[in-house]
Length: 196
Image (tube, rainbow, N blue to C red; front, side, top):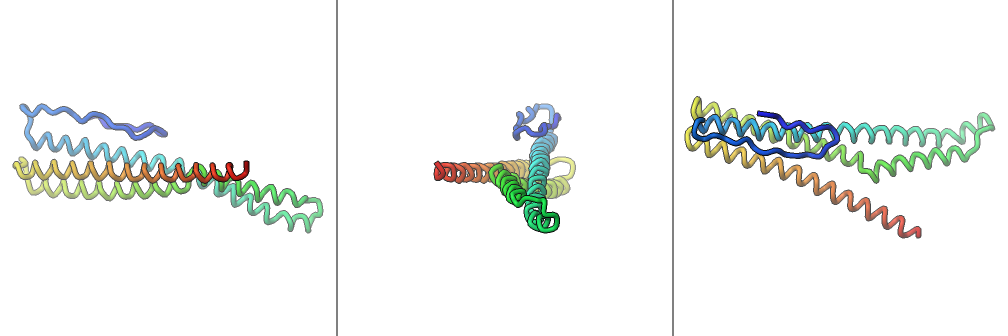
């Protein structure tokens, strides 16, 4: 079965489930193939969150380092002026302004918050996939070579419940992003509107 590969920086996507030839294969084979398809999709979703988290973390940390540098320069400027007498205090104010700007950029773009949200979602999905894999192993061990009707029904129910859980977590994360984005736009609009 072809694995779904999510290119870096692309949105989550999906592909068609495999089509099964029920006449020439056992239910156990088909259910096992469906398990692999569902597992692959979940693993690719986790991979997407972890990859995107890395990008957000890099930019968030970079902006925070720049803010710390700006604050340090701003705080050191009066001391440098006292020692050398050649440093203008305006540079301290510019450094503080720069620090505020990069913190504002992080806040408006939601880099730090998104990074944390992606980490939480990936961790939740990892927990869910481990549980799926353990439950699958339990069903497989109990069934032996051939799944009986009860085991097939239990396996399908497990896969459906897991697929729903993954979709719900992605939907919840997306709704949180949307609410956060809207609130940032509203805050920006009210700040800009109050100054006009």
